[in-house]
Structures are given as C-alpha cells and as structure tokens.
Amino acid sequence: MSVVNEDDLVGYYMHVTLVNGTKVSGTVFTYLPKEGILVLLQNIKDQTSMKMVRIPFIHEYTIKSNVPKEHDLPNQLGPFAQLPSMHAGRDKSIFKHASSQLKQAEGLRMKHMGCMDPSTPIAACDAFSRVVRVYPDVSWDNEEKIIRLTNEVVIVGEPNWMTPKPILVDGAPEKEKLLTDRIQKLFNGVRKQ
Image (tube, rainbow, N blue to C red; front, side, top):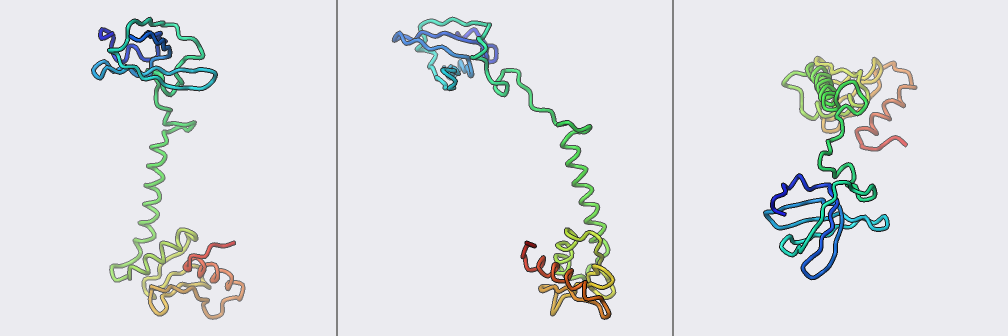
C-alpha cells in the first residue's frame, strides 16, 4: 500500500481483510502511510461510522474506483471539495462587502467625532457615540459643550458627563418629553418594550 499517495486513495471504495480474518469495507476518508493509519467511512443503514485500521495489520485489500452511490463521501469531505463561493449571490464578494461597510462606518464615525476638540471629556464622547447609533442626525455643539438632538432637545452632562441627561429647551412643546424619556432609557440601559 505504500506505493499509493495519500491524496490518490481518498474517496475510493476499499475492501480490507485484516490479519485475524476480519473484513472491513468503506470509502477511504484518510490515508496516512507515514503513521500507518487508514480511516474508512462506512454508511450502514443510513448511519455513518468510521473505522480506523492500522496498515501493518492489513492482510489483503481491494480498491474499487467506482464507488457505490450510498458510499460516496459527502461533498464537504470530497478530495477535491472547494470552499463555498465568497460571493453568496452578490455581485461582489462578502469580504469586499464587509470591508466597504466597515470603511463606511468608520467614515461616519470620523465625521461625527471630528467635530469634537481635544478638550471634550471622554465621557461626553461615549455618550455621543451611544446616542449617534440610535439617532444618526445628532450633532455636538462645541461652543456650548452639549449634544444637540433636535432644536428642542439637547443632552447635557449633569452634574458632569458621567451622568448625561436629556433636557427640553425653554419653549419646547411637551410632546418632545417622550423623546427625552427614550434617550434617558438609552443611557440607563433599559430597552424599549
């Protein structure tokens, strides 16, 4: 058996008789001549099992190139199986699509965070990034050091940015109170039910 290459034998159907007379048959799954191991994949009554045979204990064997249909290796295990397409029905690969999405998100993040100056507290940046994920049209007001959600609703650090708080601007309609409650839940980590 050592004349056969490792890859050449995979996928062929094989009948093996061991030194003690035991007969084993199956599709070759692995053949490692250096380690002296042969692994056969068996399909018996719709149950797949594997038999590992030590090559020195093989008395005689026969190899069939035409494998019965029920003993074929699954496509994923075939000797020449290929990885699934990276296109997955798209006109460009999944990797390129994911890369472009990441670059787009990074550009958006840089656009939002670019308006902040170095004196902006880190806690304010954190609060801003949490709000911008849910409400992408928010802006940072560098002069007043507040997050402006709408003309009526702003977020301030009260007493500091460790505890951000949405508030209504003077003269804002009462219906905006619902928006401030939602944002406060966002900061508290409570999900909308």
